[in-house]
Length: 252
Image (tube, rainbow, N blue to C red; front, side, top):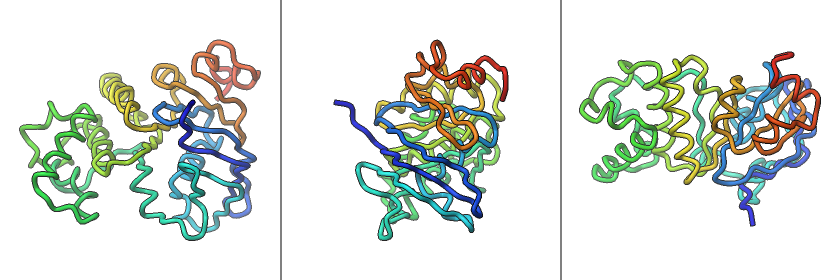
């Protein structure tokens, strides 16, 4: 039986009374990569940010419906939002390394959570950087500033920083948007390995990337979920004409 990580039930989302997400219903299985595609303004990032309540940081937002994480409603009044964001980590489009060493970037979150065991932190750094396909490139210069890494390395450092918090879910909002093909390939390779241990949700404007790395793909348009299915089905035999028009480049 498939293990479901998220249940999305009749999700409507509003920014200042504008309905940005409209009646979203679907399930996200654990240990798979879900690709979310659609043109700009279709609600992809808003949906992604709803999964760890990042939208709460903006004024004028309102939600209807439910998002269940491991069958627990993350929008119930007494839900621990800090714990949620540890469990559901996020990597943004623009890499933002902290102005400190590579090592301190990775251990920043665990230190804030009270982990100061040097041996444990050393293990976390190696494990997280290895999982982000970065360890071999930086293992001899961990005291170097993370700001001195290339753009692709910085993005993998940000991924390692999320992994060091030992989440269950990784959200990625166009993580390869400004990267060269080699850096993009390394991040895609990392994601393919990471799904063995994590549930991964990837918003991408690159349909070819979704086709390469996603197990399942969801197509959003104008705040609505138009279609979701296996990536192979979505890209070879979509059920909806809008999906076909988008992936064949007729609009977007």
